[in-house]
View 1 (cartoon, helix red, strand yellow):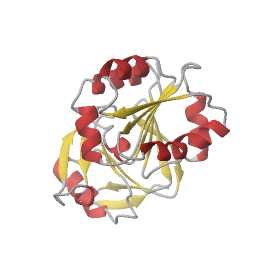
View 2 (cartoon, helix red, strand yellow; view 1 turned 90 degrees about the horizontal axis):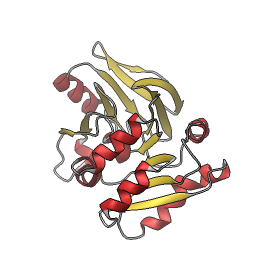
View 3 (cartoon, one colour; view 1 turned 60 degrees about the vertical axis):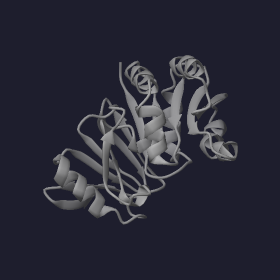
View 4 (spheres, one colour; view 1 turned 135 degrees about the horizontal axis):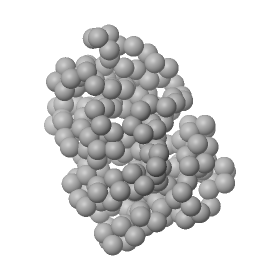
Length: 218
C-alpha cells in the first residue's frame, strides 16, 4: 500500500496540481476529515481549505475541532476518512492535542493504510518523526525539538521558510540532528511525499541544506 503525504509551507489553499492529486488518491467516497483547533471563529477559515477541493469535485467534509470533539468521534471519522487534512495554526497546540494523544496512532494507522494526509504549516510541522519549531513560532522565542507523528522518518521540515527568513533555524536543526532529508518550504508551496520520499514540488520555493550549502530545489 502506497503512503501519500502533502506538506504545505503556509496556510490554505492547496496548490492546484496537488489538490487534484490529493483527490485522485482518496480511498473512498466518504468525507474528507479536517482536524483543526477549536478557537473562536474557526468555521470561517474552513472554506479556505475546502473551496478548491469542492470546485474539483470533493463532495463532503467532516470537521473535527480539537480538543472539543470526542475521541470516539475522531477515531470513527478518521478511520473512515477518504482523506485527512491537518490545519495550520498554533504548532504547540497541534502537537499537544494530536501527537501527545491517541490521535497520533490513529493517524499513523490511516497513513499506513493508504489514506492521503495533507498538513498545512503547523499541520506539516508535526508530521515528521521529529517536529522542529522555529523561535518565531513559539512564545518562548527558542528553537524547539519535539516528538512528531512519525509519518516521515529522518526528515526535517521548516515552514514559511523565505517569509520568516528561517535559514538559520533549518541550519541549527541540521547541525543538531544530523544532515537527514531537510526541506524549507515557502508559503503557497507544497511537497507531495510518496512512501516517505519527495515525489513532486509545486509552488514558490523549496530549499534544502546539503554539505552545509543552502540549495534551492524549486
